[in-house]
Length: 143
Length: 279
Image (cartoon, rainbow over all chains, first blue to last red; front, side):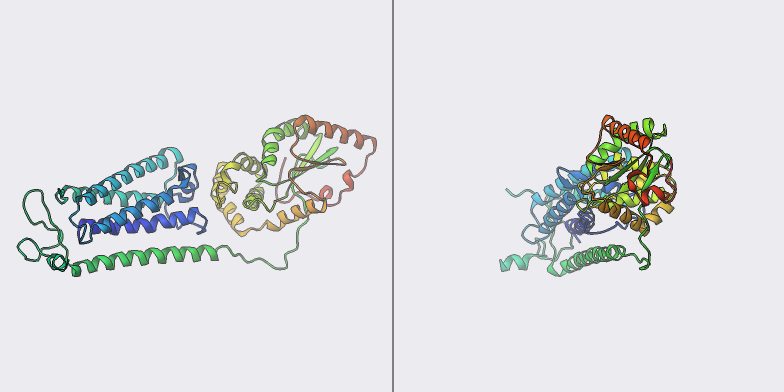
């Protein structure tokens, strides 16, 4: 299992998680299976919308792009492509920044913590760490 | 192409290379993965996808079944009584048919009602009765009425009424399709027994009371909210305090000149308020 495969697997898990939250936000699921924290308070707060779209929908897009880039990077054609390592680092770096901001809002503004948001934050952080390792050992740039 | 495929999975020396290991020197790294080595990866992706789909499907089934409650089919429709503030025997009775999600009702509740309470209700000049008139265009208004009815069960209808109107933008249809989270927060804010309120809300036990209030409005040909009944006048739209006071004075003068049952009313003037509505 290569690092890119690990990132792809984690990202696919993220797609599932974000899809679940997005479906809740769009009214397709009645209640969140939130055993810990106050998921509904967080997901119904005004911070749960970013640039006119639910944050969860942005999450689906983010994880989907991350998954596709990582999956592409595992194919024979792109397994040596350095741009994949750069893209994975950039994407997961952005994901960590965004998750940090959301976690700050949960703790200091909304005063409620969503279990699924924490899982997503951990997921994206682990993905970022794997992406850093991948980037350090990236294939040489093709001239 | 065929050569490429054959080379995949082999290092420069032509020997198979472990996944993740490096061949070549310096910063160059060539990770080769045999097609057979990808199999566990694809199996893992498949397992994750299946688990996610199964979880979401299960959640959708759960939420659908939790939307059904069982009630006694023989439960009679209660009499419309609304929620009373002040002395029921006051010279003038103000009745409001209101929809919690209607902006004009919110405007009356937040701008005019505080003055009305202080200057008319607390001085004993009027009694004020609130009747739900949930409009079909407002998807969350029934939930709001139920949240208020369950607060009334604990003697805090008016506290909840005030909070619901003050936070209308947070739970209205445009803001959410799951208003309960907001109402739960309001229930906490006014120090209700949360589990009791929660059980009451989920059971929808006051739905028939709300329906009775709405039907009373229909009986009186109420078509929009807020609609006020003051003396022999039925008035549409939110009233400012001065307008309200003028109608109250007029009704009080008529009542003093000709003491009679206000409005020829039946149920509302006789019935006690349900639960513990107070003031």
